[in-house]
Length: 339
Ligand SMILES: C[S@@+](CC[C@H](N)C(=O)[O-])C[C@H]1O[C@@H](n2cnc3c(N)ncnc32)[C@H](O)[C@@H]1O
Image (tube, rainbow, N blue to C red):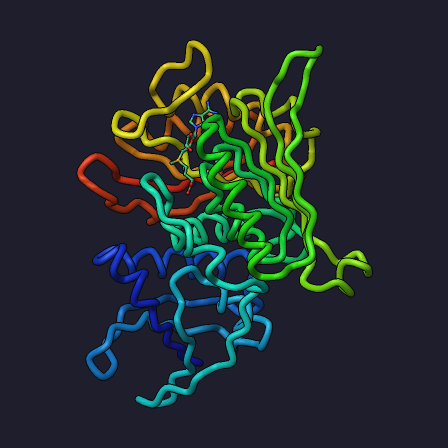
């Protein structure tokens, strides 16, 4: 059987410590089940030259497209073919099409770890019909300062976000405009008030950009839209069946609070129970919704129920639960809107 080894990013190891190998194996299993041409028959942790690798066997040699797909694993640093005890480097070709500082520059309390954000986006997109294909429309309905949006843009996708926090909206708007300018990317950016029956319902940032003047002329552009409003009003800002992927890191509860929304309780699950039905309508049939949440705020069965009641099919994605800090043990749940 062909054997392979993944070297994990040092930064991923630092954040997840003991969980990093398990999370990588869990993500790898989703890639295998949902996207690879070949099947991964099982993975393991193996020390080679004193360094830990995730090793795995496949039913058939990995094709070039398979290696390219695996280059997008959230923890991967390098992929090797294992030949005896020798490592042969395989040609990585991640989807990334923008400078990596788009994702790393912003630092602030409450930022969702960027590797975790990539993991959530990956496993959610892979549950949908288009997988990690081209041209996805990605929505984060509680986007904070845009970690999911930036990862979606990095992949070449259109990104849509919404957050109730005005400071987050301003910080992200300022950041992305400066970043586009500094990178000399051809773009337009405008902030417009959104009115409903003459009353101000929210603010909206609309950005369009391309990698070069020629690309923009040829229509090869990406769109970014961010709305400052309560997520329970998502339906007022976006049309039904607009998105292929909805991915969000929900408020953690007690410690970080779930802000906004008149009369909302501070329980993240209560917020999700109210928000998920509207979010589900924004998904295209065959699209997928992925939510990261603090398991201290509610059980996975409760969240599964909320998703199922909204007409979604919950995926069997085990082993993503991991310790974040004393108050947070985070997990991921992913569900599909039937095609
Ligand atoms: C865990 S944070 C997400 C952080 C984000 N992924 C980032 O990296 O910046 C949860 C977000 O949910 C937002 N939020 C909480 N309640 C909300 C509501 N009712 N409507 C919209 N956003 C809400 C908070 O403002 C916060 O930005």
